[in-house]
Amino acid sequence: MPPPANSPPLELLATGPEDGVGTFVFAHGAGLPMDAPRMQAIATGLEEAGIRVVRFEFPYMRRRRTGGKSGAPDRPAILEATWREVIAQVGDPEQLVIGGRSMGGRIASMIADEAAVRGLVCLGYPFHPLGKPERTRTSHLAELRTPALIVQGERDAMGNRDDVAGYELSPSIQLVWLADGDHSFVPRKRSGVTEEENVGAAVAAVAEFMRRAG
Image (cartoon, rainbow, N blue to C red; front, side):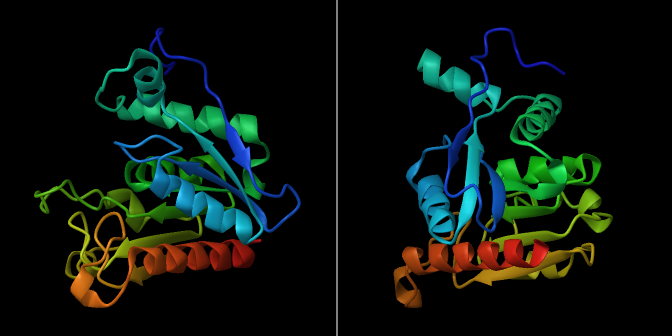
């Protein structure tokens, strides 16, 4: 399905070494653009670990940039089609690890097997909508064949430790939990852990996963 006619053209933001550990195609979540501070922090950490990071924006986010208006995310079919377009532009799928923050990672997980990519990384997977734990988004994860890493805050309101313990997940999925982190990996002050430490742990987990996948 093509993007809406008023969508600006797709642009890729590629940073980091081209001859390093590998390439991570990194999608944003529902609310923040590809260059938001939390996206940038992850990207910078991965670049310093020798990983090439390629970022992009879904059509609705591109329209926000040019139109200056907020808007809901595109329909799943358009989001999935955008992922396919990005993979085709970046290169050989078998050499790519794809994923992203929240929604971006979720949509990547839905096309990963079909796209035959090297790996999948989800940073804060939205296992269910906020406040609606009965509406799980896990059916495809039970059959996932692509090697995958999910990095999740322990108290993520869209899937905490207790929630996830009850889900059927494919053995191809590795889970890494961030101490006291919320959906954005932010811990409470009383936890004794900082957001920077959780981001560092997330970066380290992704870098190790990519080394193994390579």
